[in-house]
Image (cartoon, helix red, strand yellow):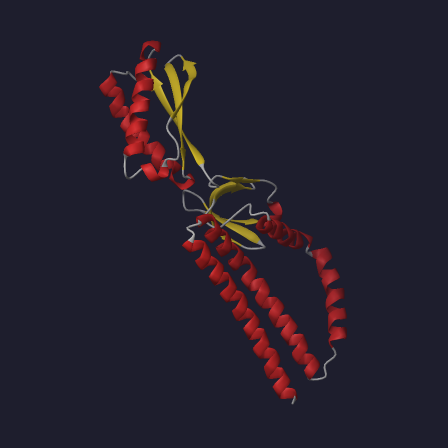
Length: 253
């Protein structure tokens, strides 16, 4: 009889884990059918962070129930664990802070895997996020493990949209209007380009004269773009703008 109850406990624990895993999978499939990329990335992050936590909780509960079936009193174990937890807590305050911060970062949806962020003075793409740390990889390929407790502010560069800021330099004031015409021409051509049009969300915005230096005049414009395509759009615009300046007779310093 006792063996049967133990088998039932273990079976229920396995079913709970299976149910939680299936629930996350169905949510991911539903988001994919609606083509909600942000939902997919958030669910993936939640799944990665909470999967291990859920497993630990299920194993602990199942283990205590199995021990009680064999006549082992759970109360002393819990009391000992409580005292040990208090003692460990005083010596691991930074670790506890990491887990608390990681929990709120997850709940408030500040960071997701795949985002490009700046945290604790380090910037890069989020490769992994746990309750303990955020793993970043920067443009040079270096990997940073940033403890969540050190994250005071998050700069997320890939949430919803971004601006591709583009500067151009001309030799004198008489080239300003031809340079603006060249910028608009390049902007229109890229909006019609099948390769770059999906990445550009709005028409080019001419911001005007940005600075006036001894070497010449600096002009600035910008595109509202899909975040991960910002640099690609900016590079292509500058390449086309150089050719368009030549066509319009605009002289650079």
